[in-house]
Image (cartoon, rainbow, N blue to C red; front, side):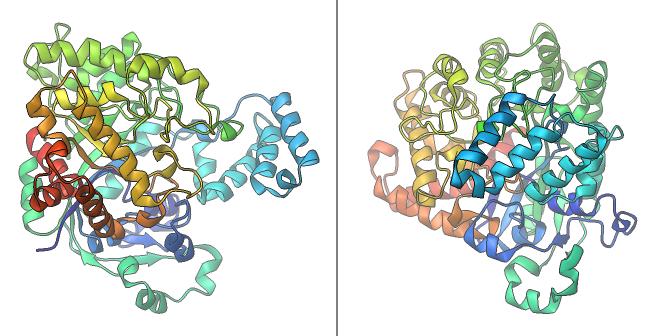
Length: 533
């Protein structure tokens, strides 16, 4: 039997959705669906470069790479990426200084783009159109989409539902994929030739099923189909930027959707007016997208109310069946202050009452910090160029205290495949070494904890899964840049596990080593769903 893989956080439909939305294809169901994959730039794919121009986990790659359990994240793009404030003269002067005094700065296209953004930000309509064009070049996103994102017509909640419907359009239908080629590439790209040269990336006949409960997941997996579970990245998706009073109504609406939402990443890159978001955008790109409003703050009273509604809890933190099925909060992107508030005011009191709410951290790496207090104290010093003992010490990553709460609640941590988050920006660290350094540090945090029992420590490998963030426009680890390469990752992981085989890490035999690897690659996520979906 082929080995199956699971990914706790990815966006398998997003490239097709964004490239075909607002086109004639939207009226053609045979073309407007996730199986009509966007042609990748295979040179970039093979080199494992930043995934602006190639697909990492479209349905063809999922099918051929045996990724059969997929937590498919819906994400309406945030307006903050495309909206700046007033022209900052100091930023402009700084950019111009780099251009005029540094040969490297003068030759660096990013420096020119930053300079143009410094002028365009907050400028009249014609310059905002130029801004959209530059963002299109930078992100390889159709300009029609960016123009829509910055228009008054763009509504997060409406877009969320359209994205959901796009993914549902081929659920439970066996499909042979098509290939979408746009623009000038239509003139010289030959589909038959490409299919023959890149069969794993371009050819598949398969079925995915968007599931509503674990029984359906299990049946789908037994039928050797892709089981998809819906998640949402960012509470902004419920329209928190326009009408906070509608958010509670929309949370309840989510609970009656035709297919269940399993978890919601409650914060993302910009202020959602409910929860503080962690610093996530490199400082060098702040001139393009300023996320400082609400950054690194805590939970506000409205956020507290929404959290209780998601979890089906009344003011006494007791389960209220009238509030519908539970939607779990995912704490990735949530600021350290907000995470501490959540543990102290929701997770711990509920745990004392016998209600174990599992902590989910869907796509993270290790920060190198022991406590949330240390993490919070460092937040204002987060820099693009500073690591802590080889780890990325921003509060977007997890510290020992986060890991302890995950274990105490039988939660799950997805290991992100974004090399910056893992602590490497320029492909200087071998891919498996980079991931392993973060994983074993988190395992050590469990084994060295004074807060956890011996039984919890003996199960240390059970709290981790893959959480790649594929199709999130990340700069991936080079050797595992897409879901076709998960088998390579598992083989390399087994070698690392064998290097520490023994009682100290509860890897007493070769079979225990293989079980630990299988757990991280599939079984842990599958078991977590069985317990909570």
